[in-house]
Amino acid sequence: MSTFAKRPQSAMLLLFSTLFIMASSCNNDQQESPSLAAPASEKTDASTNHLQRDPSDTSQHHDAAEPVSQSANEKTVDLIRRMLTTSIFKDDLAAMKKQDRQFTFIEMDLNGDRKKEIFVGFNGSYYCGSGGCTALLLHHNGTLITRFTVTKYPIVVRPISTNGWRDLLIGTAAPSPSMHLVKWNGKKYPGNPSMQPAFSIPPSERSVRIFNFATYEEQWFSF
Image 1: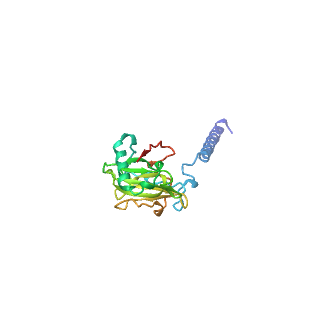
Image 2: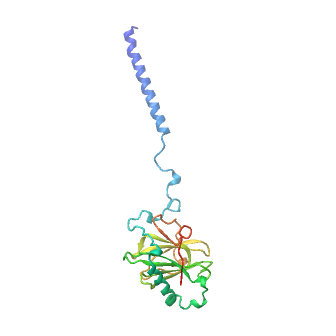
């Protein structure tokens, strides 16, 4: 066979070899490339709490309000002190020791009316037992909205609302530690959190934690 007859065959062999190498390289790239799909173990199962999030994490209805510094509002301190001594705890004062007569507070607008409601917290044996502590929620003018019992701090204020008022998450310590969803019922918040639906998902990062004593350097006032 002449040299001119062999050249086309050599060219064909070279072409086939090149195509084979390219095809093998593509297959290897596909095998080694990481999958963009989430691993099966990371998919949320509706029947469990695995990787579930508080729906308020993605809610666009509200932004979480920030608490107001207590020291910025001495009028509120005087208002709370007057309401505790002349109304709310009027009949309890004689049984209280001096160390019992202390409170801390945080102001927040819970219903969007630009008037701040007042959370009032207590500590000590007169207010706290195995189930938790007493906490109060007052209107901006000092009148009582709800007296919460068996409350385990912190109180969590969610960024979404029911009937125009922010939802609350309130923990209880007995009979076992648990978190409960407390919603505005049209007139007030229910006073016993343990009787409300359990809330097992971690609270939204957009929520505000009231009386988070582990990280919040609270101020205490006498009455």
